[in-house]
Length: 151
Image (cartoon, rainbow, N blue to C red; front, side, top):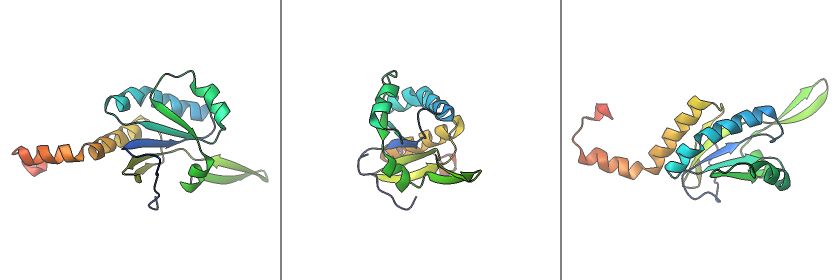
């Protein structure tokens, strides 16, 4: 993750990189985040989804959804996170954007996940909770007399 800082995200959050909203695979990934959005919202962890599409195309897309998901158009960020791959098919070059998820904490990328499915979203959800509430968890561990092997 190369110690990349995300200065615009100040709190613990989930950052997701997806390809164009016109692709079916992107929509299936997006639908998973729609299912998870309420769980993230309930604990105060925002979801930022970054697309390569222009802002007007994104506005047409996200006006249908009433969620706390933040939709961002930022090709530079996608390239900085090394999510762009060039493929050659029958002599023709294509740019493919690899879907990835990150947990952002204190403006830094903490965890990276290259597969997007329910199991991996759950894993990053738990990691984000641990980071967001780490001081609270430490206080509980110190105040309760429970053997360390149970934690």
